[in-house]
Length: 185
View 1 (cartoon, rainbow, N blue to C red):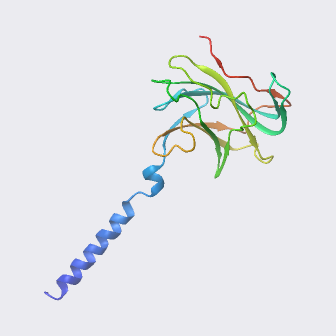
View 2: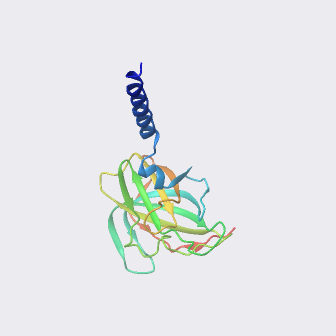
View 3: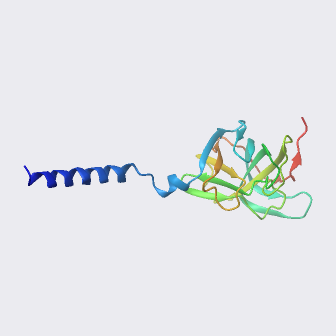
């Protein structure tokens, strides 16, 4: 029995180490964002942002009415109402992405009048649009609009995730991208 005891103890320690390794979360789970999920029409609140996606539309061309800029393509434009929950310091949507399956598309920086980067106020909603230029094959399925006030990533922070069904969205030939504005009650 004295000879078997070290082998049994070693086996138990190996099983314990294997179990500990199996239950230890990966890097994504440790530093990844906390997803706060919602649907179109729902107000979703994170630590630094309150956002509601009210509608979405596909467009063959987007234009800025205050300038002569326009661009053709497969555009998805989402109307969002946003505000700051507690403080106006750094209150702006800095990262807006659309996740479709394993593909992620960031909001276009070519459209100068979107809600991205617009200052948000406490207690006052700001209405605006986010424009995503998508490949021609992206016209159906389910997408997730992801919003945060962090610049590059939502690591160790929360992330608003709003589900969008792309299948039944309307398509228009041209859509004017309006500048963000305070909403009226």
